Amino acid sequence: MIGVAVKNKPALPEGAAAKLAKLGSATVHEAMGRVGLLKPYMRPIYPGASIAGAAVTVLAQPGDNWMLHVAVELCSPGDVLVVACTTDNSDGMFGDLLATSLQSRGVVGLIIDAGVRDIATLQEMNFPVWSKAVNPRGTVKATLGSVNIPVVCAGGLVTPGDAVVSDDDGVVIVPNGQIAAVLAKAEKRASEEEGKRARLASGELGLDIYKMRPKLEEAGLKYYDSLNDVPR
Image 1 (cartoon, rainbow, N blue to C red):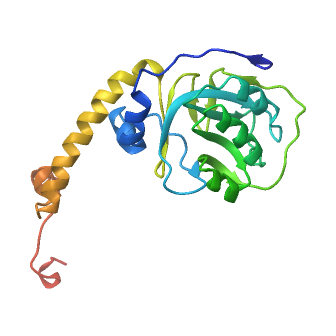
Image 2 (image 1 turned 45 degrees about the horizontal axis):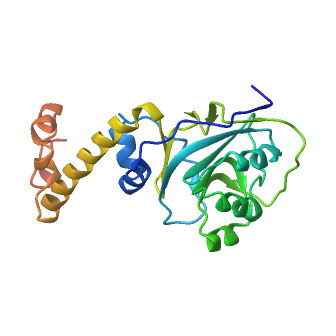
């Protein structure tokens, strides 16, 4: 689907973005049943950023950032721009000028399955990016792609309006229609983990908290007082 720019997309439920960002990608991923992660080569260009927002998707041609400029006009405050390419590419398709444009629209970050440049300036701007590569090689503006269509970015399906949750651990995509259910499961998981954290901090062992001992015994694990006691 090339040469398409869709103006509107589903919105996130009110307050969902802040809650998802606080919960983080790992907890949200687990709450979804361990699905939704983009490939782990998608890394933040600087540490400490934690965002969530509605996906505005771009399908770009390799070495061509024309459609990113088209997408800027279609972004709203709180959005996350998600860029996929029609084929593998690591050119520096995004830098501080496009980031300035996106920030003026209230966009909270970028996910790009390609390269990015102007890293120092982007950090000064406090504009977080998760990318496949850092690459100063520039791009052209010559070939149409599309905006706000379903794309496959770093191995994951992203549909316009899906929730994007990104932090130091990685990037996870939550389908728009599942956000409320995933939030409920993620919040429950986070609460349970707080209780386990307190027990672990007090010295209780994960072996006992998670009731691992019977399963370890069943699997055949045996304890010995010393290496000399181990049957040869």
